[in-house]
Length: 593
Image 1 (cartoon, rainbow, N blue to C red):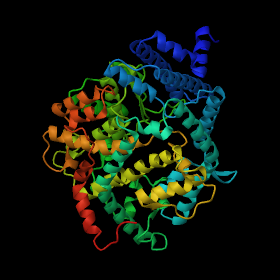
Image 2: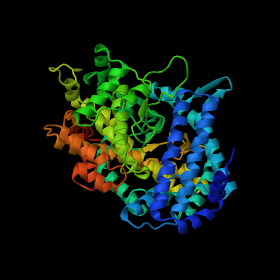
Image 3: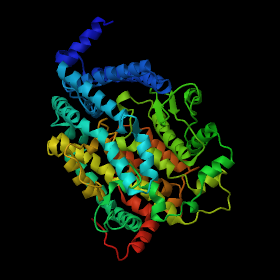
Image 4: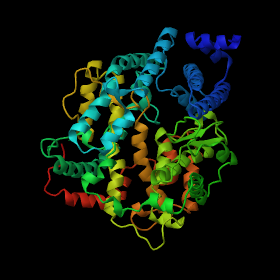
């Protein structure tokens, strides 16, 4: 039932009349205080609804969660529009107003009919992706999960091609709706004062949109030579496996052969590359031998952060989190970290198995949790990482400390054991983390071209593959149909989730790790370092984390690294032994594409 205040707020949102009135009657400080309180309250309610939905999946809980999410999105959009009426009297107020203005990815147009259209198109795109299947016949359908298993495990080029093309039949019908959401989102961005959504997205990094794109290109330039060596080695090994007809020696690598549906990680083809996985420490076996339970795995990860001088987790964390898959209901098992009340009610939701992947993931998720706890006393608009790359980078930085040294410290690995064949271990890591970099870069480069009009609807697919070839050296297995919309086969495109954050996270984690290892007094190869038990490293990390988004990211970065510039050379330092080995292996080969 609508109250008068609800109706008034809705009318304000539609016609912006109250925005102008508010600017006359409120100071910037009063407006921001109210905005912080309203957003915190609505996000708390939306988080509770989302938590219930993820842990008790029904049609009703899904609708309730969707309704609360829509309510929060509407509030955020309204406050972003209203924020344009305030100038801010202090540096702090100006920063909050700027963050509030940029607190949306697909801003809604103010016209009610267009706002509803945008919401409908976004919902339909989400459903088309989430419910997508490749059907040879009505009775013979495969889900994305089924097709991913084929891509990961099959070594038959024909099977791989069918699975790869099959998933992309799901995305072709999205093209028209995606184009319409771009047009509507651009209208919303223009009403906020931006040229288009590209201008909005690139403006979120404490620098001009143009400078941000140049910064990404600079970082990519620092790591590109190493990527080219990795690409050269992988292509040559694939050529030996499949022959010149399937994998030419001087052309981009066909995308269906790299073990991942989007060729963003190549970790599933280590067998094809001749890497000996048996030389690496088998963490899964060690966990099984030590009889680790899901609870013990979480407690071990908590102890990592406590060893750095950080506080123990609140007791409610263990009371309210989900660690194991229930037997009586369906839940979303995908690992996630939750900041429910934006204070101490923090939780993780994860169906934990005693294996290496889960062990690493728990350490990563608790990185998010400790970030939440570090900045919990800040106003709502500052309760975020320094930029959107830092949150992911923090968890990944902690994962880099899961080394043989750490495993010995927690008595999982015998003290007399050594990790041999470092190149095999580093190669397996590089196939995930380094192979990802150009993919992480080009996703948003494609979207920026779409948002600002450089890429027309009819050229969506052509320009997508031009960028993939340019940056990744990866090509479509064969000519694509005229109606193809291959970008839509990646979740983050129809979901409108920015992707530069993942590229930045892959850069920042190594830079943070290198500096923290120096602070911890580590001697020796960087890939052998663990900051476990270093209070000095933990102090620097906590100092950065508790800033949240209250300072520009260069200030936060400097607290850990001593530098206010992102630096991709740390990746080269980490993988230095592997890069040297790859150059030797690639002698006599024609690298590049």
